[in-house]
Image (cartoon, rainbow, N blue to C red; front, side, top):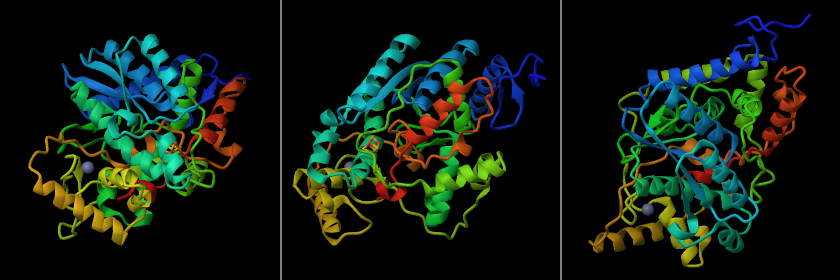
Length: 397
Ligand code: SF4
Ligand code: ZN
């Protein structure tokens, strides 16, 4: 006997990964959209009249985010202006193709689009960086440069906020990674739905409580146009340990993802625990807990033909270079750099379009119970394969 939708009693076609409810397509769309709306309103993410940049990579998360925000903005009259903002890392055969998807989304959703490129901001494309440094540590450069590029693009657009497509799985993963690293400072802020309030540009995550599997299902059933090919420079050997761990937990207990986020939210740090002091990069004005931010050190290394200076935890030469840059900058009073907000590490790891975290093929992680809708499961499998991320160490300073 066909299973009935637990909401409207029509024939169900899927089982919600988050709740286990059997739902028809329409009731799933409605549940998905209402949850995002609830997240936005309960956290007070938007204020009428604001201009919001949607970080758009052409991947599934940001494509669904742009689609749903446009829809909710109209349905609930948020009265905000949405703009798509993309970063072109200069990766031939990958980002150029995914940007074509973003350009189509621009037409489909009738939203303005701004693309900022590494080449214009830093004078280097990822193609050129890989030519110099090879395929090791390339994601370090890419992640660090991207987190600033999005801010710079947003400042050019003079938007009030940036929203990104980070989902519940991403945040739970970051909580686990920060626990494993014992990084209290990041642990404290990685579950925040809005970060960068103390900088120039707040960043929000309207999908903070949205499961990745549901984003994939939503994109699939809505037939959204998104890009799911992996970056040609993504590291082949990387295994997302934290991610695999979370997927294993999810199999046993679907609420594990939300439980981990709630655990991170409930964490309190004693006042006497020393935290890194946030200052501003003396060279570019970006927020940094060091005299010169990592992007500036990496860029200087590239420009001097010493790209490895920016790599690794601590390096005598790198420290010397950073100190030298700081001295040079403090001697020069002509800096007109913009003050940029800091992007948290979830954003930095995730914003290359969800294609930086290679996962082992595991059919159980793709079990969406979508009987009769075989294509969806295929789609999830493909996306699971395509997701890659740089490690936390890759983007850490
Ligand atoms: Fe950049 Fe992501 Fe490609 Fe790494 S995998 S080079 S972070 S786009
Ligand atoms: Zn800097």
